[in-house]
Image (cartoon, rainbow, N blue to C red; front, side):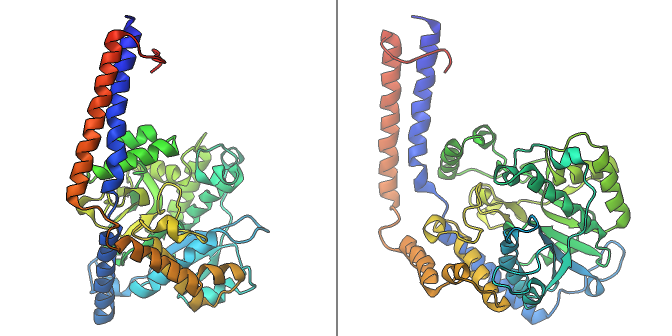
Length: 433
């Protein structure tokens, strides 16, 4: 029998076994209710702490000055193509509401949008949420870099020019009216107060752990189908999560000290680069390494991607900042459906904070009224209660029986493949496997 045929059948037997494990993976899916309860407990603790103490206790900083009199702020950006309706601005609303509720410091928003679709003024409406609105200033980006092709969502759903807007983020280093800033992308959400980060020294950034520290996820990342299969498999098999899951920097969350000198250095560094496929975070990462002051990586318990929640966070807790709900950001956007986000621990949370912000800011329109209607709120609650209903969760005994059934199926599949390899009757087996 040809060696290629034998190798192919052995490979297929392994595929059968892995496939059987994947089929069982939904039984070990993320316990959304447990994480949801943990999130609410953390919120109650932070709310009580902020209201009881009034402000964060005096803590020493790197220059010996106590934090009470420091000028700290969170900062975000919402830049949309001129003449186009606001898109990125919607993601600021739930974050603004969370910061207003649980932080001692304001949110600063850089945007080129002056009015919401219903005609409401952006600056005055967001002021009701404690947001300070500033205009987006020009940032000199070389034309070759501005129109460079990138495998990023901003280009896949837009254009190279839209993807180039991310370099406008570098101007946050020019906000020298503040002593420290915490930058956050507008496709994420805070779960609890992040004020403690202001006490850290130096520049910090989120780990670029898109694959949650898994080489298997890295291999499958080019296919949504296989990415989801691998994710289900990983959630079904308990394992310890590493503290360091990436060596690169993701600019989804940054702690920084504004400085005009740093900004000018970043711009010079950007101009000297021939290609920047990694976008603004590549500029930030390589610049600070160049000046011998590399960006320190935040622990995954502080900031991580949504697809890592429930499987790659030590202790299984929710991070302080969750960047995107998942690979496709299915739940952190206007229009997210309750039935699609029922298993996500922060899906309803994002929806509630978004609608609370809409109400406080006084923004209207048919689309918002429908998304935040009592009927929609009931729908989100109904899906949550449905997940908690008796009979929706399998008991451990039935789970164990199903595991044995699947293991038996995998063994049978393996035996069939081995017999077929021995008799040489397997079809479709090629060396390309």
